Image (cartoon, rainbow, N blue to C red):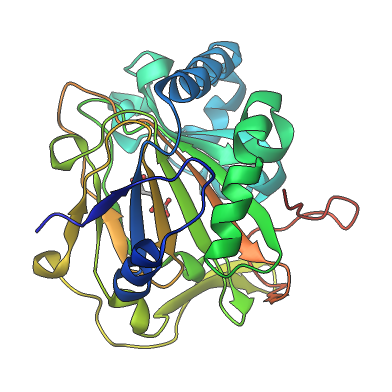
Length: 290
Ligand SMILES: O=C(O)CCC(=O)C(=O)O
């Protein structure tokens, strides 16, 4: 069954019904949160960023073979940079890129909200601040951003996960703001969420152990299978809010349509940031709020 959805308020405030749905489900689908023009603005900006990106500059990173270390470092250092990550299926025999770069990327991250003026402006406004505060984030801080492309035919599956696995605080406070920049549904690799799954424990933590990144199991309870997941149907302009513990995932995109989305993950500055998180920022460049 499709998840319930609401029409967003103009100032970003959340009605009692919206808050009740979020409390029950662990996600909240708010249609028309941003305009089609705002979505187009981000898409155009990303097109330009990709135009300016030279895949040859990182080809050694993505070559198959003994390059896992380079690939790993490219990811690890991306927290306060703008880095480009390819779809696995964009490469053919011998690791050669077989697609135009505009339709070969999986995502771009993770510092767009700080480093790019267009993304910075989209990510910081009083409407989003209001929504974040209504959700209970006392001092919302923008931790990371991702532009997710889910290109036609080769857009990869995102396995079921909880976002607090990757952005851990004590107490847990990670909250995802996921914007559909194009219509997203079950036909083009749309999102799925497990209603109520946020009431269950955090299963895993992805963190540094010394200088190695590890995925630690915290709780063996399996997350709900396909039958428990509701499609989060999101027409262009929709904001999907994801509680940090709600299991969610997305299917591969085998359709002819892309499925561009922009996600900002916030944490509460009142909670204690776990220093062994994968996302590391230098001391002189702390996370900022609105
Ligand atoms: O866009 C997707 O396919 C997955 C996004 C996601 O898991 C997230 O933003 O936490």
